[in-house]
Image (cartoon, rainbow, N blue to C red; front, top):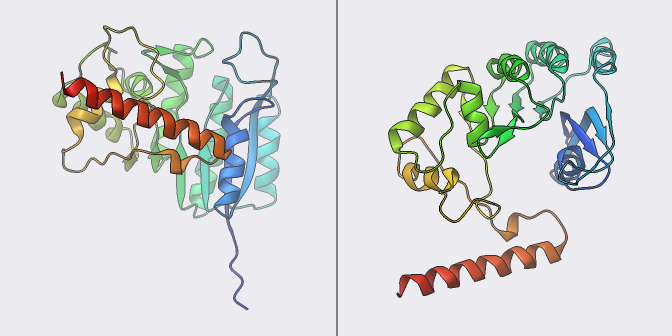
Length: 252
C-alpha cells in the first residue's frame, strides 16, 4: 500500500465562534483538500465583526511563545497562510516565523493583507499597522489584497469610479516591486453596497484587464461553494436572476 503523507499548512488568522470567516472557514476547506491545517489564532471573537457588537480576546501577548514552541519542536510546513493580524506587534512575531519557515524549505507562503475595503482601512487598522504589514510582503510568494488593500500597500490614492488600464497596471507593478511573484486581487462582485451612481472598482478592473497578457481572471460559481447545498442553490438563483436582468436590459 502506497501511503501518501498529507501536506501541512500553518494557518495564521483570527477565530470567530459564530460567522463564516477566518479560521472557521479555512480549516474545514483545507481539511477537505486533504491538507493538515495547523491553526495559529491571533484573536478569538465571539462572532464576526459584521454584527453590531462582539466580544474579543486579543492573543498578541501569547503569540510569540506559541510560535517559539513550534520552532523548538522543529516543526516544518509545506505552506503558510497568513490572514488577520489585529495588532502591529503581532507582525514582528509572524515575520520571524515566516522567515524561519522559508529557511526550512517552506514551499508556499500566502499573505492576505487584511486592512480595509471600499477605499478605507478597517477601524482597528492604523497607519503604523499598514506600514509594518508591508514588511511581510517580501516574504510572501502570493498576496491576495482587495483593491483597497492594494492601494494601502503601495500608497496609491484611492478613487471612486473608473480605473483605466494604465492605472491598474501601475498598481500591479507597484505590488510586484514589494516582492511577491504572484498577486491575486480579490473581491466579490455580488456583494457591493455602493450607491447607484458609483462604479465598482473591482468590476472595472475585470473589464479593463481581462485581455491583458500575464493577467488572469478567475470567477467562482455556485459549484465552488464549500458550504451547505442550500447556499449553492441561493447563489445559483441570484446568478440566474442577474443574467435574466442583463438580457432584458440588453433588449431595450
